Length: 223
Image 1 (cartoon, one colour):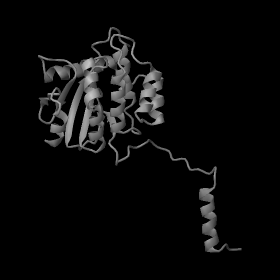
Image 2 (cartoon, rainbow, N blue to C red):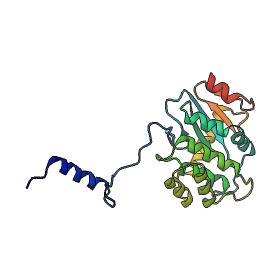
Image 3 (cartoon, rainbow, N blue to C red):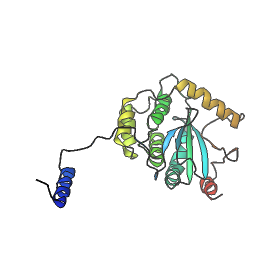
Image 4 (cartoon, rainbow, N blue to C red):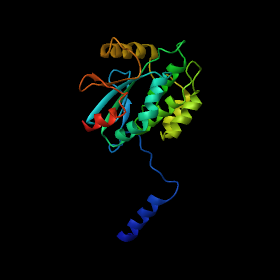
């Protein structure tokens, strides 16, 4: 007996909405094209937050125990997240660990957490909020936050659960020693006389920016 076309369509509709029947989609998570992505730089030692074609691009050299770096995040972290989120800014974070006294110290673990958070499911604005959380919970000279502490900060920043779980594991995401050498050499090329953090560099104009001007970021966006 043939089933009328209308009844057949209704039957298919019921099957599609019936609980317990799901379709598994295999593959790798892809970034949302409408949201600024976050990923690892081509050289492997920076974390990039924002669209590739953003009109303004900067590189931030930062040390997790540097109090002046914490001041930068306190003063401009929310603005950085906003401009990344609206597609006007791309930020490459280049961590350094020269304030550590051991290879797996505070700065090394925080730097590694940044690379753990560089994930296709995350967004650039969420990552920037994570950076601000980390630098707002500094412990200079101390052990620094635990993996669970950093995972909680990632959750507070709005990062996806899969990224939060990855941060909680504390697994190795970058060769810290190689990162330190590469990023310090890059920083030294920018300014061999005042080689310190925080340094904010504009690769378009090849200039070190004056971050002690209260309006430096707004001027950069408007330029």
